[in-house]
Amino acid sequence: MDLGQGIRKALARVTGAAIIDEVAVKELVKELQRVLIANDVEIKLVKQICNNVEAKTLAEKKIESLAIREHIAKIVYDELVALLGEKFEPKFEKGQRILMCGLYGAGKTTTIAKLAKFYQKQGLRVGVICGDVHRPAAFEQLKQLSEQVKCDFYGNKGQRAELIVIEGIDKLRQCDVIVYDSAGRSGFDAELSHELKVINEKFKPTDAFLVVSADIGQVAGKQAQEFSKYVSISGVIVTKMDGSGKGGGALSSVHASKSKVAFIGTGEKPDALEVFDSKKFVASLVGFADLESLLHKVKEASDGQAMQKVMETGKLDYESFMAQMRSMKKMGPMKQILQMLGMYDIPDDMLSKSEEKLKTFEIAVASMTKAERQNPDLMTSKARQERVAKGAGIKADEVRELVRQFNMINKFMSGAKKNKGLMKRLSGKLPAGFDLSKLGGMGKG
Ligand SMILES: Nc1nc2c(ncn2[C@@H]2O[C@H](COP(=O)(O)OP(=O)(O)OP(=O)(O)O)[C@@H](O)[C@H]2O)c(=O)[nH]1
Ligand SMILES: [Mg+2]
Image 1 (cartoon, helix red, strand yellow):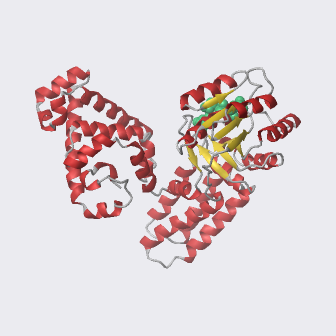
Image 2 (cartoon, helix red, strand yellow):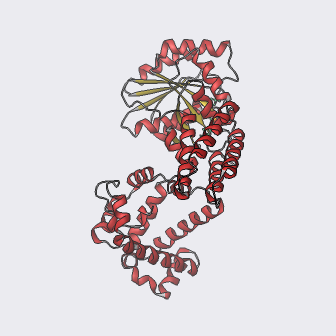
């Protein structure tokens, strides 16, 4: 069970209890303790959090029950935010030189591609230097990644690292941000400290990020201390948060060691990087919805033209429906989208089924004629449904299902238009030109 699942379960149990008394609170604290320890959070910190939660929660016993449920979630939230430190503020100026360091396999090279993408999104030109001269495949790995994210690359096979740095800075002088990928080591030794010293002198980094994998748990803090002796660490990047049950330990120990968590890596792909914001992160652990991020994603992914049409005509057809589906896909995995709505613990097989369904729908829409796409009423004809199914190579039942769902969404949209409360709640948070009263479907929150 990951940290979030555990915490949400502990909270659900106490907030679901008929009466919240001392017993229920003690139960919550015990469960919380178990989850945090399993996540490799240092015992001393766990005790401190649990004592605080217990004391604060019991002090509020008199408040009416609905309020106390929210209040307990807030107490746990506050304690966890304090455990994990502050939000990191990345710099977006030109002339940055970023040194990446860390031990073997921590995720340095992968993270460089993610960072390149991150800074590029801010309009900065990024170049990367392969300084890993020890591992033969390192050059190709970084080169391929740089092609994938379309950033500049410099490497020189067979050359010594201290020369590559100098050449790289020169070759990439057009870049606003230069990121240097250093070689990993199995542990902290004299060789590593020497290399860090040399690269520091030649590269003159404006920032150095230490990359650690979440699965080392609280050792992350010790590594941050160790590296800090040789380079000035601006922040720690904790990778593999997606696959580790020890992320809580890694993050909290970094904060306890007086370093900052700068970013977290949540997957292997170049866009699986988040600026670390403890409030946002903890909100997700506790299970609060994140409407802000959802709307940001909608803004990023929306297919402008097709949406515009829906907004102007106030009418959904299969073309705009498909555009909406494409936007959904661009927004990332459905799991992420649902989580932003506060729906965290949805079984994976249910998710994959819905994603499969989306694919089938897309194939079906592609097999419709233009007239059918623009006049959804045509698609109520059984003969047409069967023809589309045949053309798409899917079952007629699947087309019927699409038509049914389309009609449902259409209906929901006209309903949403009338829902003044929802509109009001969302107004001002939407991107310019995005009129929810004519759109509906997306903003359901
Ligand atoms: N699931 C997941 N995998 C990751 C993440 N970051 C890196 N990886 C994987 O971890 C492995 C090692 O990543 P690299 O980027 O090569 O690590 P490195 O620190 O450069 O390794 P060396 O250069 O050999 O020291 C690769 O298989 C990556 O795909 C992450 O956030 N999530
Ligand atoms: Mg590497």
